[in-house]
Image 1 (tube, rainbow, N blue to C red):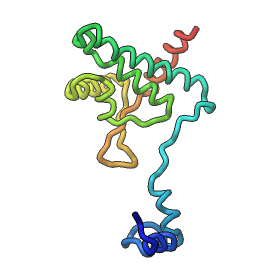
Image 2: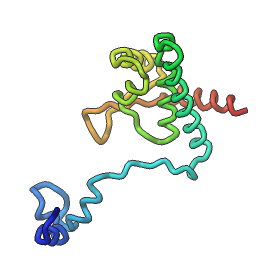
Image 3: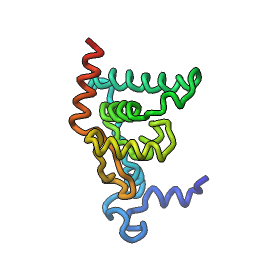
Image 4: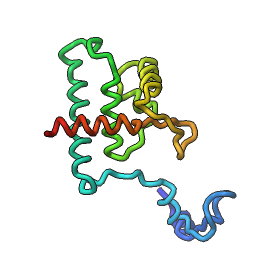
Length: 160
């Protein structure tokens, strides 16, 4: 619980009261706290209804593929390439970045296997790797332009 003195300081503190090198002096501390956590870009359903429907269908398809493990040995379906393509396409439609670690999890295979597939798919020109502009330690993975277009055509054909 914050006592009244601390609450009063927080309500009037300026960034100049913060440690050196943090923020600008013309903003109040309270105003800047909300800006520190940059809001993640949210997928706005009304923005692109086709993208929304496709992303939802792809996410459902991925859930259904995971359900197979309840009925069949998972080793029968150990090739993660399609799951990775689907996950990256859904993320592209939702305008969300995908890190290597997130894609490894989405692949539902051991990490070393997922990393080998990421490399193979990148070498094949289906995936592109780029540094995360917000965190230099992370690598983001996305679909190449050709792979994204092929998936869009594929799902368009399914909808006909």
